[in-house]
Length: 231
Ligand SMILES: O=C([O-])CC(=O)C(=O)O
Ligand SMILES: [Mg+2]
Image (cartoon, rainbow, N blue to C red; front, side, top):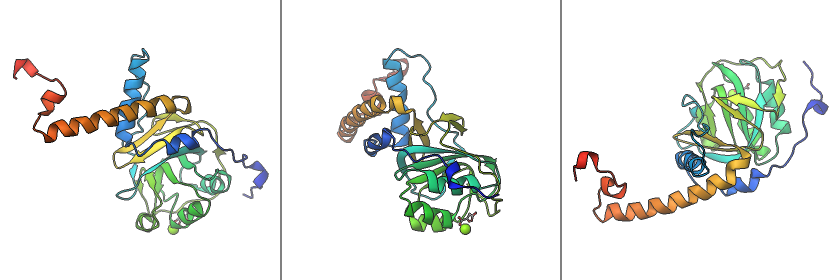
């Protein structure tokens, strides 16, 4: 199928670009905790989930990315939507793609080189990828349902930049993606500032906890845990 570039949504800058810088190196786990804490302190009961399905993991050890999402809805076993996203996504984006969990190599070294040339930050995909060692050598962070040697068709343009459900989360372009060795967290754009503030507070508290532990305190003491009056 031929596709004219006029069908590709305009690139837009997103308000979370600066907040992504402000992710300030927080881990995905810290942000998950901060999201839950921040939700409770604003009177919420059960926090909305911000962690993606744990089956979507780093494609190579040490991969880490933080940045605003640019969403891709494709068809499993077909990677045309991802090729279109390489053209349409604004620099500084993380592609977040729904490919139905398909066991195909929807993305590989060639596409990672193209992504880096467009200053894209990384890829999160519910589907397989390939050339993982080569992408590790490039330092292009990818989080996927696994590896797959199988190739893809290039027929279905899919949809770009609209809401997509990936790994159990509803994700919008501009939401903040933070992914590392523990998994993928996606913060809705409107919650980013508050969650990052809470994450900063949590990180400061943890520094104090580390100091206490190194001085000999127990984790039971620092967390105020006293099971059955054992202490
Ligand atoms: O060519 C593809 O469809 C995926 C791939 O292996 C690459 O980007 O290197
Ligand atoms: Mg390849």
